[in-house]
Image 1 (cartoon, rainbow, N blue to C red):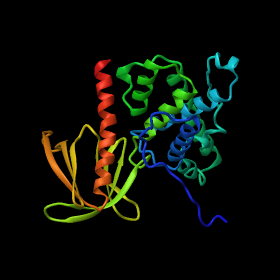
Image 2: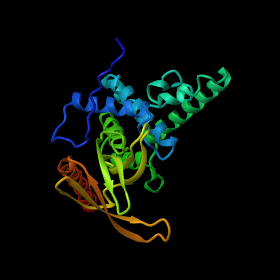
Image 3: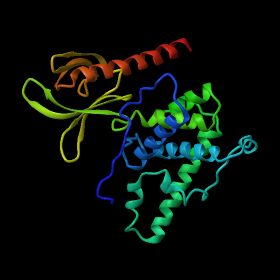
Image 4: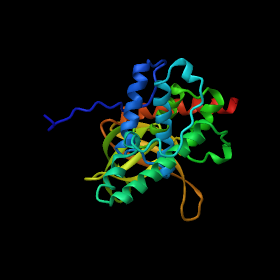
Length: 275
């Protein structure tokens, strides 16, 4: 009965004009599963603790009555130890299985302390823009400027951050990347975070990642997707321009998806300029 499992995943984080609560809840469940399954590539573990804090805030608020909603939520060290496995990556806990009980306990206490710290900082303290350097903190800072912090806002912030990770809410295509001297079979991933290229294999390896500030243009010619990028050379730190060519029968679909994401990014830039 457990030999096969059918999993339905949303391949895009492009939003319709309006989402129902059920649709948003499904997106949150997928985003949380991505965190637990280790698909979210974070700058450091702090981002994972911040995401866990947002998910916990959401769950706590949703379980409260209207009267309780008015009360300020404060967490203390030791309150979350038994619930951490619901919010943190599963492989973290598997790595503890062969450790001594005392070592496991110390690690759980440390994770608990970090999540509680994130929770209180994100939900209660006044965030300073210059201190919000990670993607999660930038998103929370921006949201808190515009809206009241509640369960719905926490849900949206959680999804907003997870959808930027290359393997989350992404459309994936097999293609051949053509260069002057060789042809390489690759996995092309497109999502809200940009255009990502992986080397195909048992465990795909990320070769390059380009966000929408790096992508200049894209076009489809027959079965060829041509991407124009501007990047900073690691040698002399100069700006360089390059064309990437991918042979795939899905080039038109890939071009259209990039254009839709590009329109969203442009709208966000215009909104920030007006502010």
